Image (tube, rainbow, N blue to C red; front, side, top):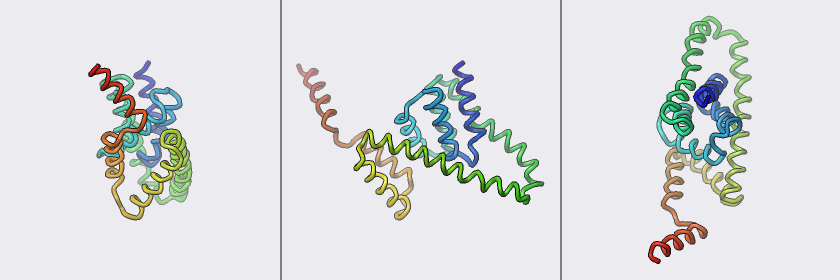
Length: 193
């Protein structure tokens, strides 16, 4: 049943994710966090951030990791297959028929009509990540990260992978917070005592 659920979750996301990886992220989130509860918002955000730093399509990277986490190596293969299968099927079907209809107004209207829907889905996901960030970092630090990210990405042209990598390095190697320092001190005291 787990393999079937993995297949259905990523197949639905692949079928409905019009426009590629970024548009399928909210759909994957809905399946993985909302429906099946395989991970929470924070874990999903971590997977998304890490996936963005690696080369290749985001949808397949996320499917592979989540599939592996849920059901091991077979889960990885099932999730990957479910992610790429809709694309393969639709490419074969659409490329054979779309060539004839590409200049029709209804085809161009369909493309223009889907763009606002994808934008809203990404906006909702962004708000959920901001809300989660407020809980973990606080409002001021979350807003600082947003403004710093906009400046680095839009105005200075820094690659998103570099920013995410720097934040991950800081989280791993940066100074410990107050409660973490106490835990380390207590653990060191237990080892010596």
